[in-house]
Amino acid sequence: TEADIAFARAVEYGPKEVQNYLQYADFLRYRYPERGLDVLNLFAQGLKKLPGNITLLKARASYEGDMGDYLHALADWKAVLAKEPKNDAVKQEIRDIEERLKRG
Image 1 (cartoon, rainbow, N blue to C red):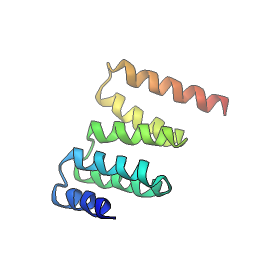
Image 2 (cartoon, rainbow, N blue to C red):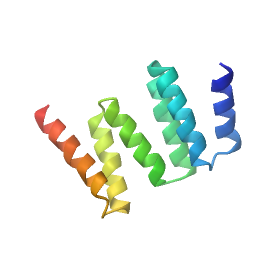
Image 3 (cartoon, rainbow, N blue to C red):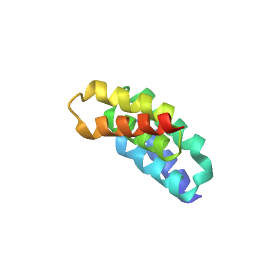
């Protein structure tokens, strides 16, 4: 679609702009839910250009958790916590996921 092309171009021409990745990921997630792998690849691409970016890590962790990929979400939330050790919301996300994993 035209929107898909526009978002892809925004990422291509502004690869260091976090917002481009987030907006494109949201577009794909909600317009094309079957393109989950594209969303994850987009986050990976963003993190390659902006290594350790907290905003992208949080967005990917949240997406993974929403998709039921708790192990990857947990790893990403722990990476965020390593950079933001006093972030109580992140600590709660980790506790919630660990509880889900215990329940199976």
